[in-house]
Length: 245
Image (cartoon, rainbow, N blue to C red):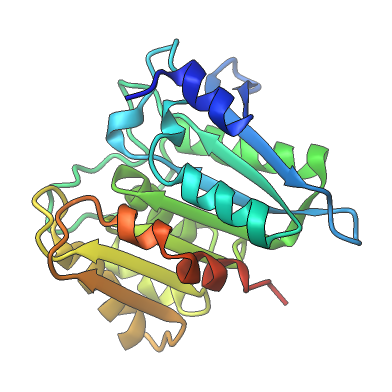
């Protein structure tokens, strides 16, 4: 595996630190692709990594190891512009306070401190860089898939669309998600996160009246469903085709 500096250099990304008003620190990577749209704004993608790319204070950049190459290649070839933001969860934390081995979980009243900082960083970048609030997207894999479901459940009116791999959410939040285009992927042979976590979320959203959620299950794939999901440019095309009205 490449080290953080090599990964960041390969993508031409910036390594940055968000400092919260109470002194908390969140490392993240930032990459601007192209030039802003005619309205002067950039579409924005918030990317949440998995557990294996958490930070130790020296490795900001390893969160780009999975999926970022496919996302940024697609953006450079097919989008006029993109603001790509990839916060890094510290090693001692998780995006949500729930084990990914559980059959189900209940969303906590408040987001974890690290997820709250990620959202604060996102809002600051949108304001300072000129992010387009009508073209705001979220994507995550594994632990980041759980984080993505959590964010969508807390802020259902914020995002134009989502792409989530091998994660899981709180089934009770499904009615809040019926109006969001969500592309969900999981490997049928996943030994780390049960495929039922994705299946059940999709079913709950559909039972609540949602018609904008889609589900792809790869019959021979284990945990790394993000590999076929992100490498298929049709999935990224679908994600970025949406905008909030």
